[in-house]
Length: 295
Image 1 (cartoon, rainbow, N blue to C red):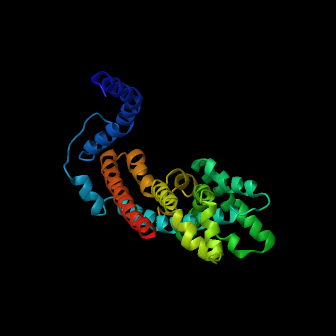
Image 2: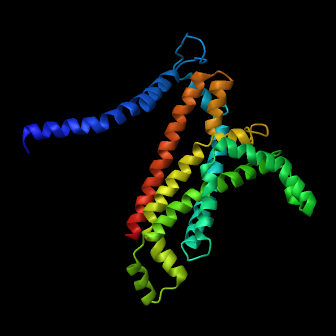
Image 3: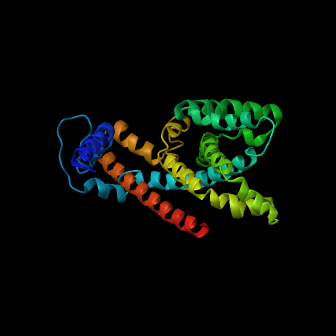
């Protein structure tokens, strides 16, 4: 390859990648660096004065001067329950909906529909259902559990968030797994049938191992989505009752834009980023081990 051809190729790469790289730099890199610098200050987000206070904000996070640790434990507990439910239900729906059922496409669309609705809108709709719809329905049909104060106690508010969040996100996992299952070669399945493998053996020993890369993608997406939970949390429970359902993202928002503690919120954002990075790295490592075991 001549020098002129290599130069043309370089300019082509710059032409196509340059705008995206510049956009990423402006939207992601610059705010991250700015936030990291602010995390060492006591800036309130309004005044122009900026006093650097060293590691004071980070010390306050771990000495219970902020609610960050409380929001972390809530988000972690919520993520464990919600991700397990979304993955199990999503995979189960995909397995059922690849079968030749009547109205199969309509069922797929109905399960995916909540994913297309914004978190804020979904939260307000379900808030009305929990406060007005469930009690009325429970009174009409004498169902005591539907008359619970769903958003009034810590346990029921947690359950309400789990129900709505799972209902919203299970369709995405179902779509990914449906595509993965439909992509499995017929030759593989016919070979398993000839060898006498039953339905469950074929599913757990052949189909799911082949789909492991897709399961990994769905797992990453579900985990990241839960840790970023904000709109649904804000509109459905507003972090209540008594701050028991405040997610990490909502807690950072409250510190920055409600309490005007922008420096502290910046430090919490840096810790938030590191937590996501650690969890994602662990998931990636375990998933690769799993894929290697099945390959």
